[in-house]
Length: 171
Image (tube, rainbow, N blue to C red):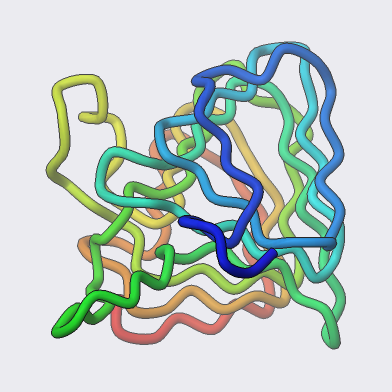
């Protein structure tokens, strides 16, 4: 996909309506807070690049997120790389991944998450404040990189999440 305004598959809707699997064909661009509802699963295949437009975009997981990459094909969560003159990526350019109390069985392995953790945005986005926020639930986060995010890389609230082999840099 070249020669388009956004060279990506763009998500405009705010809620996934059914179980979804994202393949690594093209980057994905989220232009809002996309919600994975309770009882639904978003599966992200190895090598997928998830880009977020701005500090009003993120992923809220009320259901399940399965983002299991490989060492050679990690799953990347980052800011959309605008090409405007003078623009550079900054920590807090997008919100982050928010796991709510209804989220179950979420697994993240071999992911690379950067430039998230926005603490500003509109009133509906007050839940974010870190690249990965886990509130009153648990996730598994393994063999991953969490770097260059504003505020907190990972914020656990009343959570017994498994975090193993994760590299934290400049959060």
